Picture 1 (cartoon, one colour):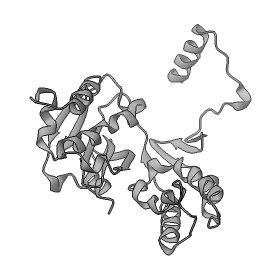
Picture 2: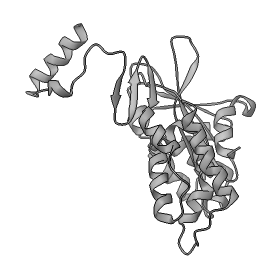
Picture 3: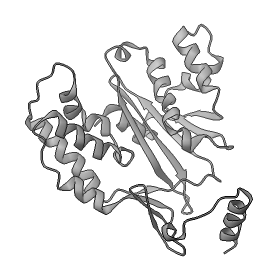
Length: 251
C-alpha cells in the first residue's frame, strides 16, 4: 500500500489523473503493450503468440512483411533472431524475386517454435546493476543483457544479434568487437542507469579501448560514443562467454 500512496502522491504533485476503468490493482501480473508483466518476469501475450502460430506461410512480399512485423516485435525473446530470419529478410531485398524455399520454410517454423515455447525474460530491476555480455565473429555480433536474481543466478533480460553487412565483414577484429559493444545503444532504455554496466568480453583489447593509441577515425568516433556510458569492461575467457558467442556466430 505504501507504494500506491507514493504513486498517487506523485500523480497529485504532477496534477495528473488516472482513468480507473483502465487501471488494475492488486494483480500478480498485468497485460501491457503485448506483454504479460509481473512477478519479476516478462512474457509475450498468449493471444499474440497464437496469432503468429496460426499465420500461414507467406505467398508474397506484403504477407512476409506483415509476418516479420509481428514476430519482430518479440525479437528480444529470440536468441539468434537475425540469423534465423535471414532467409526471410533476404526475400525483401531490392530486385530479389519472391521464391519460398525449404530454407524459408524452416526459418518460418523455427521462429514460430521459439515463440510458442513460452520464452521468459526477467523484468529489469533499475535498483541493481546490469551486466552485458558481448561478442563478435566474422559474420556478426551478439549481446545479451543479464541481471542477477534473488537466486544469485544471472537471468537474461533482452537479447540482441546483428549480421554484418558486406562492408562490416571487412572490419578488423577490434572494430567488430567494438560494434558488438555498441549494442548498448539498443539497450539504452535499460542500461542507462546510475549503476555502471558490467561488460564481459573475450577480446582483451576492448577493455582498454579508451586508452588505445593509434586508433583509426572509426574507432575514435565509437570510443567517444561509448564515453557517454558508465561502463566497467572486463575480459573473460572465450569458453565462459558462451551466450554472446552463440549469438554472434548464429549457431
